[in-house]
Length: 427
Image (cartoon, rainbow, N blue to C red):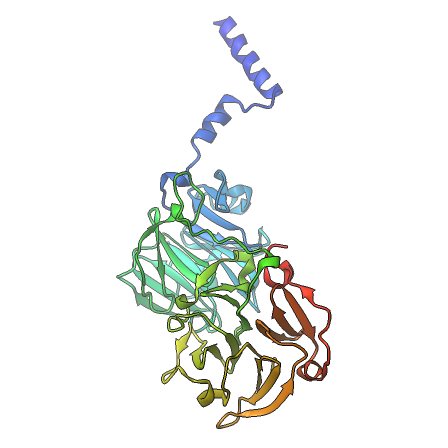
């Protein structure tokens, strides 16, 4: 017996000396939860840097692949203070007043973290921070204005969804019996997902409506697992190969790049760039776009000789009576290469070949006010921001300070290459 004890002690010492895990550590690794086995998550949330955390019991996964780790390695106080060993619900909230915070809900308590550090005064009773929201939640997800009617948080408990208005601190409760009971929820690239079991269902955050063939297995989409994958992974294009049909930022600050039949949301880079069919957000636009611009809380989408106008509030809704012809809407005829509207102005500039035509959007009927020359033609897309006017042509762009400087130029400036910082492509 004494010899056996010495032998085991020697083996343990050799293992430690050679950097191998002791026997109990190896057993612990084998006991770690495996999301590829098909488990039900307790909560899912991104942090302020765009890392997505998946919680199960006392463990979590950071990102879409890799082994489970103890949750208290990232959010220490969840374990030290409450000793629950699980998270009921979690979400990241971003608005002008709160910057970016992560909220975690455990039974009747809420924890608020900023930059992975628990804020003073927490944990609190849920009702202190979110009056009218019940305890023992199933899931939670932020829904900003423009995707919901106001800056909101959706709290799920059973088939009830408690819609909390961040500004007024009031709650409206709806029952979405057609939606599975969500054990976690995630907002990803302005789409909303209810996770239940090892599956997920995409839903409309305003109505709860489910469109498409759901549920789907999360292992095909939200994690990298052997023998799983739907073949639809989006690869960020190289900047030297990028082809833009249109680019625009709406009045809610959402920026879009359109290419072929697809679009990419540019201002959500921290959550990851991904392309989606244009028809997912603008279902009537089935053949791609030639030009896009935003004005007065509306998105104008031009294809061939027609204009589609969408209201931007709480998802894009086609205004009744549209599409209309270019001539009816803007007093323009012929193919449109690009359009742009500068911030806090009421003029849209329509680029056609070597001509830049300005249209007063406050006039009725609308008509061309000025027809100005362009120093070059065949522009793919245009965007006007506080930085100036970007004219995109292939994988290059030209920058002008104002429309008048553009019109007065007799020669094109030296083109600059599109970069990752500009469009999120691969340099």
